[in-house]
View 1: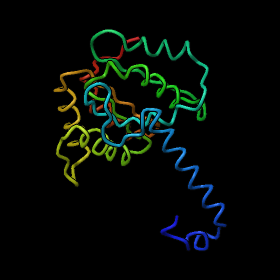
View 2 (view 1 turned 90 degrees about the vertical axis):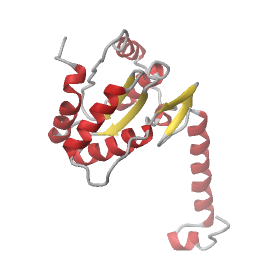
View 3 (view 1 turned 135 degrees about the vertical axis):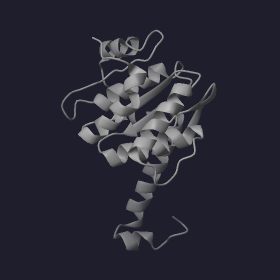
Length: 193
């Protein structure tokens, strides 16, 4: 703020308002770091584990569905690939529920934990490239086709030596869901109850 004394005038706010907002941002940064961080690339959990899940978003919100969280966590127990889908109306804290489960599973997924926004095909493809492939060191070309991205993700995840987790949030777009199905269908196998 001292480097930009004109910022308050430029934003049409008082210096006190700007100072208060700045302090709030700093508090959020400290809270995020102490909560395990919000990492765009990797974070360390004992060993270097690629992680693009923004755990800091769930730290200060109480969910109160411990039995559901535990049931979801247990659905990932054992060997083999698991696919769990959380559905519900908007605003029911599905993302928060998924994040709470991910926190409990962090130590198990040493192959990486990745989060992508699947609300549109474009966001999904971008997320797979920037929040999954790049963090694990996979070369990403600017103009990769959707099919090439899906095939690369499938190949890379199949070759991981340790279990991995992908959180595809807001998967409401049929094109995005189709890409997810194409990328993971033979990794997950036939649907089971």
